[in-house]
Length: 498
Image (cartoon, rainbow, N blue to C red; front, side, top):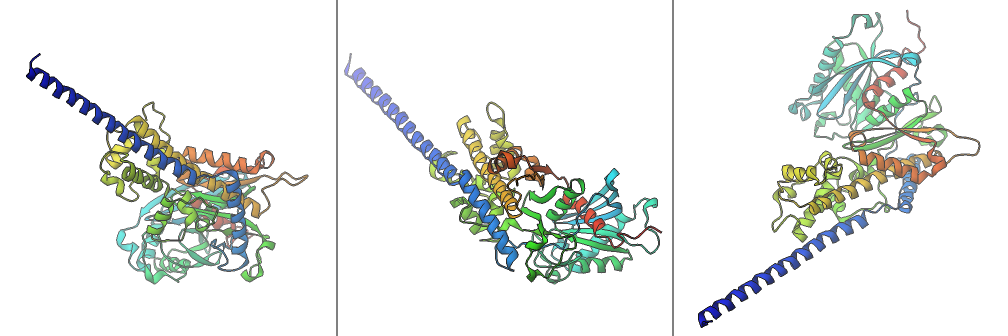
């Protein structure tokens, strides 16, 4: 072999060796990066852990905070607001009642025809109205005038046979899902606007008075019989159908809980004597916090960057507003520290709240062999293409960790309520059913979340007590519930029809 040929062979061999070395080195680097991504996942899973002992501690802390919130004003992170609802529906309610459900950029007006125990809700009609953006930051007069006009238009379509007799007012249940300091069943002053509203002249005003003033302007003779939030409406709606309903929980974009408290448990400082011996308490449990909550650095960063740092900690762990965002933050760390999606961090992955909980749910429920739904979501939302199956499996694991933690903590919160009212155990010789009415898109549509919540509650209660606790889906409680509360607090109760 000639010198040139030998030299070429040597060069070729060296090139092959160098290429092989590069492949080995690349594989080693890829292996290290993958190991780092898996380490981040496992560390996150460990910090999100919700063993039964921890959940019992959370439930005990919820119970303690409920007692403290009732004992003194400002005594707890739980507001434990007196709702003045001491007359829940019995199922006997009859007649035609209206409801107004205001809690976001849209509001709904409803007409509900009640037929008593034999017929229940005979019929209902509703209309949804979008609020023009300029009215969300304008004056209270303009906003309530707009709402009153929409309500009057809806009343105008009332069937002729249902018109009230002369001298009798139509009655309305008003679901107002903003922070309110309630002063009676049909009055309350606005503490602050949320959800994009900013109408300064309404803060501190009686919201029922504002609405009534607008109704009077257009000559609509209608009495607001009940002012409630959506959680109390859900409880009322559940109680109409089932007298064993003792609490309601909303698990949607946000979260809250309300329950029926015994009169003797309400301290005298409230100055209230419930007519029926019971009173519905609006817990505002989204603001619950405890050292036992499994917070991670992702939760702490989310809280610090939020519009309300230090507040609504429980809500930030369990509600639909935040679950997808926690998954995004964990994926971002993997991308930054382990090149999980390649050498550069996908720009879209840096956008807060771009990954919504419905998208997280769709990925979590993906049953295709190649996790096609996960791949499509990553591509469509985050503009991340060419993901491998093992990468998609990591994404599903992240969704499972976040959803499981949220569902198990929600179950612990419910156990806390049951402990507070003595329904967490079965007393000797007594087997009383307790029904929890649940509503909200997270509970209704995120199947794995719902199943995990229900199974965790059974695990916490034990077999005997679990047989007495029932979770029921109370669809559209905030609307029908408000109409039902208008009926159960009607000024015409006991008055015979002329």
